[in-house]
Image (cartoon, rainbow, N blue to C red):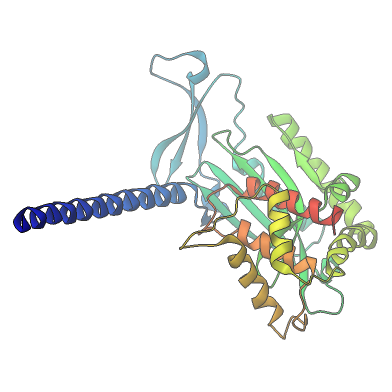
Length: 327
């Protein structure tokens, strides 16, 4: 009897060990899949020269339907690669028609700027233009928290990222871009879009005029936008975690809560770090501005989020609009 019980116990131990090993392998496979997806969506830094590699639209030599009868092909690092399979309706607009033009427009207007270019798989492209002219800067009331005016331009060769130019702000302390409230975005025409060659070129002409208008009426434009940020800065929060949960729920941002990670705790730690930073001047108190920025940092954390920049901005906008309405 004892031998049988021992044999049964050994079988149970073996089954348990097997189950543990199977779970370990599944977990490693999931982690590898997540990492692969993250790598595929990760933005890589690049330069304007590399961004403007040669591209052309050619016939697909293979037998296929009309929707895939054309190929966008490019020469990247001396190697020809296919970037998109598309229909004859697709109009190829090379990066060299967009990003160098944006730089030229800033220079023509005498606006000092720095730019960071990134790409995803040499098919989706992003340029963040930070205006370095101090006239465009804003410091949050009673703090040393400085934000700078930026323009984000995006384009793609695979159709997954639509051409767009959109204004925003750049917060020095966390290096993330902040969205402009929807009302002010529309009022001051701070977004550009285009689908075909002619509309994209026309939008760049509009961009030049927008810069003229914004610079000419900078006080009004900047005040209208930053007053909304200051509205958040004037709302002090007694229970930050409750406010974080409320905003995440309203913005439909999933909250992870397991033994490895907790979304609310992660955001709370980001906020606490800034609250305790004496150089920023928040003196240990949390307001809605810090709540918004903590969530913004979470959204833009590449180690946690594989979404494209434009999708992150959409989520960020939902957060900001909710907090402005229910502050």
